[in-house]
Image (cartoon, rainbow, N blue to C red):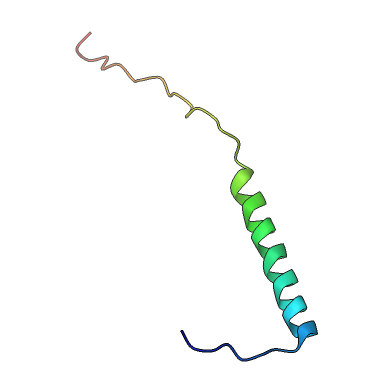
Length: 50
């Protein structure tokens, strides 16, 4: 592994805060569509053969 360049602590803090916020937002977006069964469409019966 390459040694990481030491960043200013404030810069680091800002970076981590931004990342966590973004992660949370994406998680929320992912959760939004609640578990729903696929809407079942009525199968069209072939009327010509009936």
